[in-house]
Image (cartoon, rainbow, N blue to C red; front, side, top):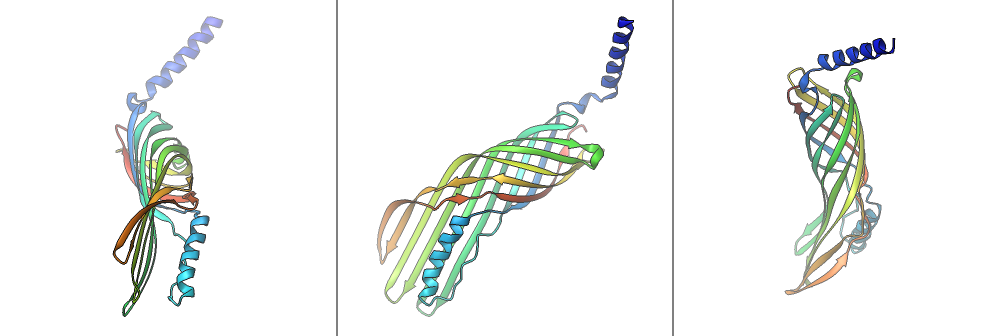
Amino acid sequence: MMRVRLSLTACLLLTCLHSTSAHAFLNPYARVGFGGNHQRMHDVNDAIAADVGWAAAGGVPVSAQSVGPGYGPAVSAGLWIVPFLRVGATYGKQLARSNYEYRDVGFLYKNDYTFRMREIGLEAAVRIRSLAGFTFGGTVAQSRGEADQNFALENSHGDYYQDFTSHRERNTYGAFVGLDQTTPKGLAGFVQVGYHWLELGSMPGTVQISDNGSSSVVMSQTVPVDYSGWSVRAGCGFDLNW
């Protein structure tokens, strides 16, 4: 009786494996998407408000605004290890700007802030095709954040320019859920919502100063910079030999 049960179990297992196409495992995939990432930036926003507030107090008609979302592309490629689980490499970039400028006859006030993020890492995701392609997963990445400030003041007293560039690299993490569907021909489309933990802290950098023709370079650092926040992304791709 035991041999009969074992034989029956083996037959069922072989039948399931035979009914699954040979290319259902280790099936290459690729995804290309574009989206926006909210950024917390509490300390950065306070610092910008202080800088712009100094100008406003001096009579320059500008007002501070919070750093907006960062937008950019993201790509990923790898293998469906089994029909419901994929693992691959990821690359993404995002850019956000906050610019303030006022011009008048013989007067210029300009303060531009630029924030960049680059992520290179790995992703893993589980897709449930019977639930309209419901997908959930996570990422781990080596991330490089950059923060630049370009300041210019021109008036009757002379010209003053300040260019501050900074960066920092850290391991960061993310999680996401969404819908990911593939047509019988292998064309794919997806939409996902996620959250990224991208807190980098204070970022060291250099300040180049030009004051009425004389120049100097000094070392400095930013206030704590936090690119963390919710993200929304949509895109397309393919699943080879699907």
